[in-house]
Image (tube, rainbow, N blue to C red):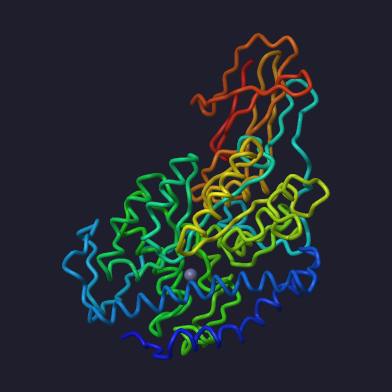
Length: 460
Ligand SMILES: [Zn+2]
């Protein structure tokens, strides 16, 4: 069933090294469109090495999984734990019944935003402080933070779960795992129960394709759609709305265990992904201006490389706080694979420790949530604002699909100088939590409202 490439990993990796020109092309293109600052030759080399590391790790994992499956005679181990007894897949059974297709993306109910190209969707300003009592502003990121950060993990590395859970417990943040759907359940070491536990702990579990674009039976449609359906059927309380492109959008499998599959039918496709996902993560490691993020090709820094390095401005984290940087206020995404040793663990710890130091300025949240927020914000509008002496009523609307986009946006409102301390926020009679912040002696209310869910009234 599986068309195995028998060549050794060493050979695969050497061939891969020769194929990395694809990464080069991408860097050059992005530079030409002005989306990132030009990188010097040395810095391009750094980025290429990071990309090489990630590819190598991904391929090592896939090769090993395949070897294990072969050794097991493609038979399901007795110890396999199925979390959903009604969903039984037998070895070699790849049948796929597609459920009703997702809604169509249409004006006013978009599933995702079109590529902005070089035209910013909005002006990137600093934090807003509405001038007059009752004036409102929509915060660019949740909790009125300066920037956003998401940590993602690819390729089903179940062996690292304990480490990531420890880190999550220490800092109180949640991660996003991108799963290769059909690799789950073929070994007692990787079963759906592991991933249900991640979901139950509040983490984000999304798709990294059905076979990582490595199975001759599949094509891009099935890689995206079948993985989405199988993850949702196999896990409780999961909506799969995000994807990480296997090998990145510029699919290049030369030298990989998937080498025979180089036809167009197994290439990543932005247009195909747009039918099923509200956002897709790429592996391109230079940040994007926040007003020009292509949500179907979100840049991501591999292993947070250069996170703390001011000499690498395309990926230096603190550039998100610098108003003169193209990265000012952007969404910083990182992706990890396996965490093989203490050195790698300590690198992660350094990144997280730095994030904790600046957490008052950074919204740290799973990939899917931030992608929802960013697209709602980019299309959000306040309408029908009506005021009385002590209240403001308004509608908050966006252009995104209401079923897929339910992330509350943070709003800020100026309160009177002689504010009496009472604050009530209601949307369709449902109370919503609010709090206040003080800036230059003035008091402002911060509260959260989901777009397109009816009239909001703030009384003070
Ligand atoms: Zn991968």
